[in-house]
Image (cartoon, rainbow, N blue to C red):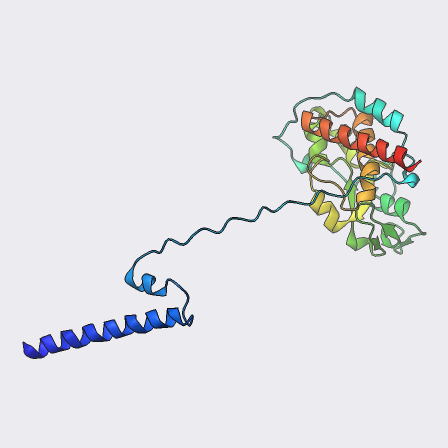
Length: 257
């Protein structure tokens, strides 16, 4: 019995010695403050540090390029005739929009035709003349240059899913194919980098804009013209966004004069 009591007292002394050592280590800043409280199961009330107010820097102003040659009066007129309606958000199936077809015959499909059209130098084709092997493309969204067609995508300026939700849900299969493979108007399809095309996805200008700031004005103007040409609608948020951007672009042109 005496031996058991001796062991108990010895254990108590050991515990007290450990706690004293921890307290001393805290004072000497060897251990972080609160270590002793953690061992005892107590929670110290530390004063809360006020959060720093982080102010996000506004994006740089949108500046139109003189080389864009945007007819703002015409673009505004086209914008005014576009109907504002809620967007349909369900039912889109990409397979119902057949793309990269050769609608005009021959072996060159819409993708290859756009690669040939948008290359800044004559493209090199394969032996059969049906596939582009090299060219020189400038991505209008990022300003990056590419010579390998495998590194670029053909972007629908107004994405297929956006076209569907803006009125294309009521189109026939033939009209959907005509839109998805439209090479008759250089505004509908364009060459872009794979990264930019995937970042854009099915988003409209209200959710995505080109990272190249001086390309935004032409992008939005062309977006409006494509929607007007194909009789597509805009929802309220999209309409307000493109209207505001168009106003800023027009104002920037006036400041440059």
